[in-house]
Length: 209
Image (tube, rainbow, N blue to C red):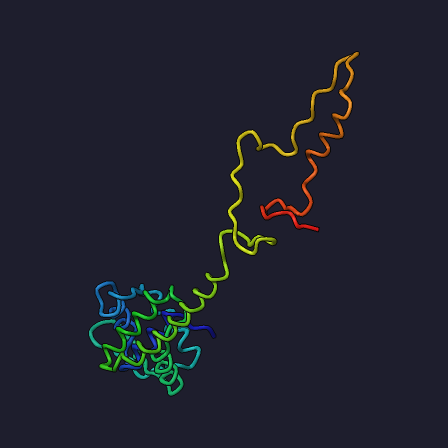
């Protein structure tokens, strides 16, 4: 079963001390100790508790029946405690989770009075690896493909307004009785034929024989 951030927050809060759903919802409310960092609505909290029960990570410890409605108090199992401690000690693997999961872990460690330095050190290592991977990737990506003959990167030549149409428009057909100029078609074919050794994206010199 995949457990999201809501389940892990509820599990870690119960690992601090047995609690009922109302207390966890108050803890993760907008004005709660954890809600200032990551807010969870009350229905989300109760769904998370049901999933933790199904996974065998928490158990029912008691049922409080004071002046208000009955409230079920939950406690963690041995498997749940192990998972909560492993999750708290693990850095996040994506930068997008820094403002949510990582900050929640720091807040939970602060509530417990645990040292946050080990988690911070592990998170720095993860971020350093991400930064190194991005630098390697950017070193192999350029704005222009390398020129095959020159070996370097060349900007494409600017196109003038008069040469934006390709192929060029065909010459108008001669009128009745008109005679074509000799050699015109052959000269036009030679003009459209690319020079040997030159590619469209490369302006290097033609190879010598």
